[in-house]
Length: 235
Image 1 (cartoon, rainbow, N blue to C red):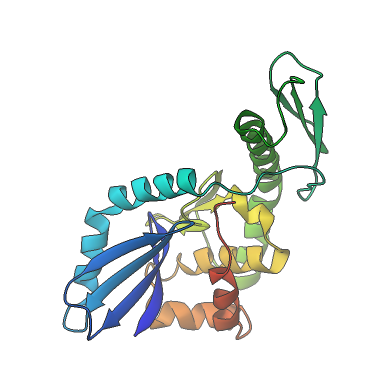
Image 2: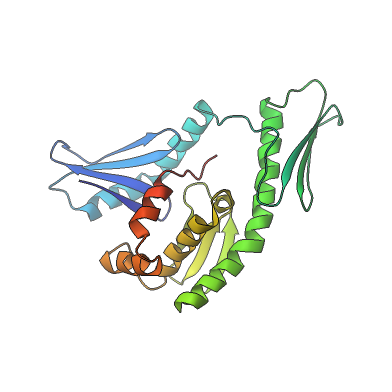
């Protein structure tokens, strides 16, 4: 039997409980997908405790995979919601990044190529800065709108450069949302925000949580969850 859980530190984790499994095991596959396997005789709570104890190992493995399987280089044309990437080769003695209201500007020496690691690092830094600005302008207000629509209450909203999960809700109903939501279409952003708002009522992923989320998404919870599984916080 397979299912997906939302781990508070590691994000989505695929759980596989089969008769073939003889022990609890964890695997991490490129680009960072986590799989938790356990025998049918082992309670899920015990397997999750096993995962909690090895969360640091999972994160280190994810970092090694990111270095071994680097993402495709980012070049022009590239647009975020409000910003366009502009590259300026040969216009600087060292690499510089500048983010304006509508552009991510990266200048670099003529002896470097845009695909090189130093330039790519600067490009991604600039794009993430643009995403952060967009997320701060969009996500808190959208959260307020959805909470008001559904009659739910939360304490605060923070925006972070989180690559292990799209969002989280603390026991005190403080919401945290990833800047990488800015890469998703609006309806998936709304789904993630609604998911976290539902945690202000049910701080777990039990049947009542899923029933509430399904009701608030107009019966599309399963469909939207499948679509989110195809998305990656890492880019």
